[in-house]
View 1: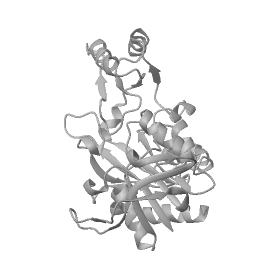
View 2: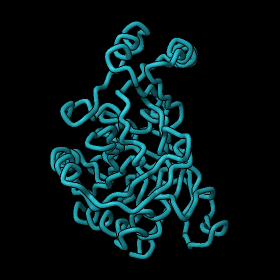
View 3: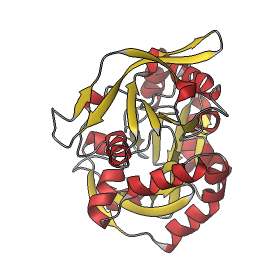
Length: 310
């Protein structure tokens, strides 16, 4: 197959952790042809969806992990699979790329399906499952957020469309910084904020469960660094081996059919204690850590699901 990766620069990825690199590595092992381009190089041109990029091969040698061919322009309709893999923020730039990739429907298989990536960003799809999630509010108005904090005392405040733990704050019952943080966020963004009741179980870890075409294949536990509330590996969270609990399987059974129906092949959900906090569809991570802990080929399972769809 001909596979295109729309992603952040492949030259700078961490080959021991990056899920896009692992997907490319597995595709190459299966004999597929690989092409890389950045989201800035995507274009609509008189009915065609074009990209400037480079064919590439990979090897597991950091710093020499990718060999890129000459820059060329391609018509993405001539590819079998296009991966939507750039990291958020989920801003208008990101949303526009999903609109353009949507125009490949019936020509190339775009993974994850861009229509539903656009309509199901990480922190919004969970709103369909209020019985699975901690108390949650999405709002921009300060007085509304203060009322939520008054009800729950200890809260997490974060940007609605952020990622990687950036801009995540815990405000406990004694904290006096809500107004200042609200001023900070609203000073540079028109977006609402998301507020959730703080879950003390986060000290035991924030579990990343990986689903392939709606089915759970395993999980890793991300434990916050000393003195940190955030467990994201981008900010020092420590990955640990962990199994799936009955509650994890219950959550996956609830959300899995919808993910499968909407073409969300590779999804990573976040579970703290008994609560679902995020459903990550834009550019989920965790493949390599799970493969190391559980000795399973998650990337292979993802490609098998894609090949079955084709």
